[in-house]
Length: 165
Image (cartoon, rainbow, N blue to C red; front, side, top):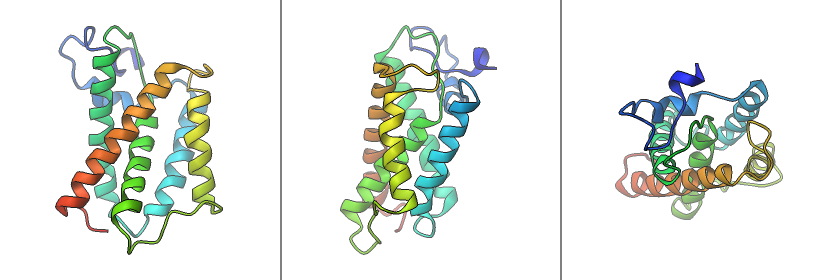
């Protein structure tokens, strides 16, 4: 399935732009999938009750798609990229913006289950990626891109009032 739905570099995408969306829902293996499911579960604990779950899902899909497009433009000849970490890092970017903009909201706390897991995921996903490559620069790049995209889109939706916290 990865062969038909994975992300590809811009020079190899051949008009199949749906791959920018589908790449975020594919994984290298079960470990990769489990790690991203756990990461997603724990980071969204903080958002529970603060933002509607449909709004989080729409935000995550848009942010991940934009992140995949930017990554594809930078790594124009990459053969394949997959993984939901772009969703997770964009949500972490949203949480950072919420901390800066939403003073009335409960702060994100380390020392909690969600806080410790989020910090652990944020670090470990940059040390080892879904295909068990350690310190792979492309993983660090896509995570940085999706974190920044999450912050930018998060700021836009909070400033414009599209999402109320």
